[in-house]
Image 1: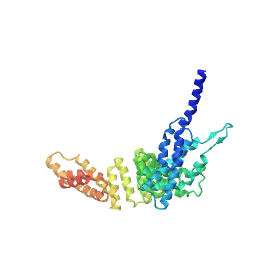
Image 2 (image 1 turned 120 degrees about the vertical axis):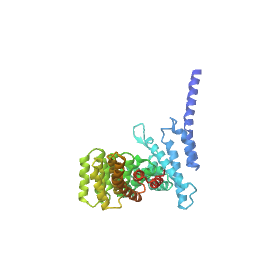
Image 3 (image 1 turned 90 degrees about the horizontal axis):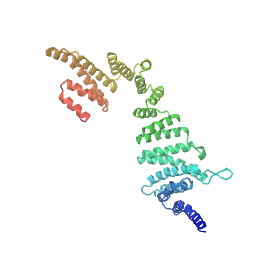
Image 4 (image 1 turned 30 degrees about the vertical axis):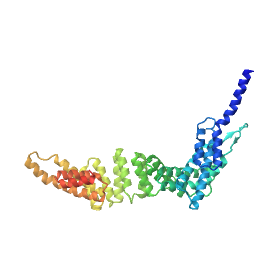
Amino acid sequence: MKKLTAIAAGLIFGAVALPAQQQVVKDAERAAKEGQPAAKVVEIITPAFTDPATAAEALTYVVPGKALFSEYDQLLGLKSFNKLPEGGDQAMVDDLLLGFDFYTRALPLDSVADAKGKIKTKHSKEILNTLAGHFTDYNSAAVTAWELKQYDKAYRAWDIFLDMAADPRLKINNLPADTTLSEIAFNQALAAWQADSLNLALKSFMKARKMGYNKKALYDYAIAVGASSGANETVYELAQEANGLYGNEDPNYLGHIINYLLQANRLDEANAQIDAAIAQNPDNAQYYVVKGILLDNQDKKAEAKALFEKAVSLDANNSMALYNMGRALCEEAYTLSDSAPTTPAESEKFYNEKIVPLFRQAAEYLENAWNIDNNNTDALRYLDNVYYNLHDENMMKDVKARLGE
């Protein structure tokens, strides 16, 4: 009798325990029906996310998801009447992002096989309809997050928007044109870049490109991001494509191609590329700069200097041509000084007649380069050394001031 009582007691306690484990879900449902804030509903139901008895139930995620989308709809209504409370825009962004997380977590848990093996769902239709109904809201949320300078959330909202556009389960009517979707992928990349997520930015730039976005800005930004993140192969691929599309107006793409080939020690290919470009457009100063740098890296200093001089003659405002011409003159002066006579009198004469003119010429080119491009600190580094060799203390102080030292 005692044994039977113990078993019965165990069954009674077990029967009570299961509802107790699920009580937080019911409490959260009640809070949602009472119209409590979505954040409160999420707070109540949070223990259910880690409880084995409820973590695998679709309802555990449907309840907070539904509360979040309902709150979003209420705020959207207030916004339409210019009655959105302070922080309302932020709440709308957060509601959509978190609501999507809960609903997409609920979907795979909602497909359950019955005794006959037939798959049945209870919440999936409502979830998919809700998501489809809020499709365009995710684009709006991304724009809002961008305006709030929350670039990571802007990226995520656009990511959801693009994923939803490609999801056949949602059956979205009047999808944006492919060109519009590719522009959104481009904006998503910019958001990731602003958030300092270089890998995500490059991934999105490449996605936009795959979707058909081929404006010049995409190549410029993607190459900049790829170079910063060390994605050299991708930079090379982008530069080749961009050079075919925009090479006539921007020779920098060819520079990236040559740089890649140079680093890969594919010098014959590099020379062939730049020679073909010069043959096609012999008046492009930047091509001579690129060819000069290529030759300089092959230790053909005199030939390189002649090309920098040619570039300056074609475009006197080309900062890179000016900088490299000044740099070449400095290097020539350094090399020449190594062969200076050893006697004081001869050395001084050699210095004044051979070295000083080179440094003075170099100073002129480098100053012009820096005046055109104030970000060229390399020009200032050379100038610092030039004025040191010219014993010009005032100009040395000036250069250090420009360097912020």
